[in-house]
Amino acid sequence: MSEDKKLTPRSEDFAAWYNEVVVRAELADYAPVRGCMVVRPYGTALWENIQGELDRRFKATGHQNALFPLLIPMSFLEKEKDHVQGFAPELAVVTHGGGKELEEPLVVRPTSETVIGYMYSRWIRSYRDLPVLINQWGSVIRWEMRTRLFLRTAEFYWQEGHTAHATSEEAQQETQRMLGVYADFAINEAAVPVVQGRKSETEKFAGARASYSIEAMMGNKWALQAGTSHYFGQNFAQAFDIQYLDRNNELQYCWTTSWGLSTRMVGAIIMVHGDDQGLKLPPQLAPYQVVLVPIWRREEQKGAVLAATQRLRAELAPRFRITVDDREEYTHGWKYNEWELRGVPLRIEVGPRDVEQESVILARRDVPGKAGKSAAPMAGLPGTVQRWLDTIQADMLAAATAFRDANVHVARTFEELREIVLDGWARAYWCGNLACEAKIKEETKATNRNIPLDQMGAGPGACVVCGQPAEQWSYWARAY
Ligand SMILES: [Zn+2]
Image (cartoon, rainbow, N blue to C red; front, top):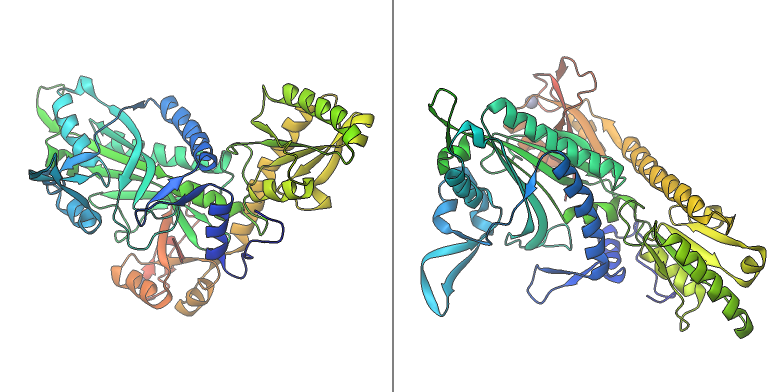
């Protein structure tokens, strides 16, 4: 980017700001096929760090990875009525292969419950085979009409966990456990505070008995569903004959779950943390945690500055993801803007006077301008950098949490709710009636985000729409 071409301010046009950040920070680009995206190396490095942290957690909770095929027989989707209805409008269908029309059309997977269910029906024989705890990393295609990079694209990257259990209780525990894993990841790695809760009947996954989500507030106060976990009961097990012999040698249907988190999480990180200078990446996930920028004005200063920079790089590289920007064709001011746009959490400036004094200047991305700058001795720099990265990570979570909490308001009446969701989230009692939910959506464009697991001492209340008795809080907001 060039210094004279600033980003559109967030307050002016949040959507334009978002698109500019994604493209100019080189996270992703538009593909030749409409609705598809190309994830560029910087975006891929961010996604790989997300994958790494999630994968570690999946394995720690007993899951294994496997790979299932991209193509699924059309008849598989038709076996579960709600599932096919939910996905039919978004299916990409392959009708020809090898120059011939296929006997049965194949769908490009929009999600893999059906094909995995089919395989589980062949693999599971007895209670000794249970539970089956498998995750897949891959991509899926849903033919979306209105698309936006990372948030909604025809093809997107994700993981989908699929598990089968002997009892309803175990399957429900799994559903909750993985929701908790997502929340832990979002909060502690992405510095994105999330609300865990159950989706309403209208918003739940096609074919699920119960769906749960983590919901995050973006910088424009819209909500984003950042991960979901579904309990299927025996729906898919009955559709795909996933049965096992129990201890009494009687045939039983399994209880299954699925859970997924996608490249949407990248969109969440951009929109929760970013500012008018660009991205602001949490140190735990940033492709580069530190950028070293050597600075010299006169040619005779260059040797000593570059030597000091290389020495510091060697000290820091074993512990941190680091890059050195020693390009000579750009000014250091240009480089500062560039790395701020790309969200690197900590910048280390090394100039001639710093070399003489054996110190460096540290600039933290999350605190703009002079307030975020400080000097530190070169001696013991790895320890100093670690402390700063820990501080930045914690402060980013604190800032995002404070912003979220300042923009959630209790609505006691429909008029209050209407007003609040123009610029925030409403927390309101809802009776559970579909008509009340539909009225809110039609008249305010806000949807039920979830019914939070933490009900914050909800007692007997009155539905914000109809006034009938209501027991539970829900969150309502405009959403992506
Ligand atoms: Zn009501």
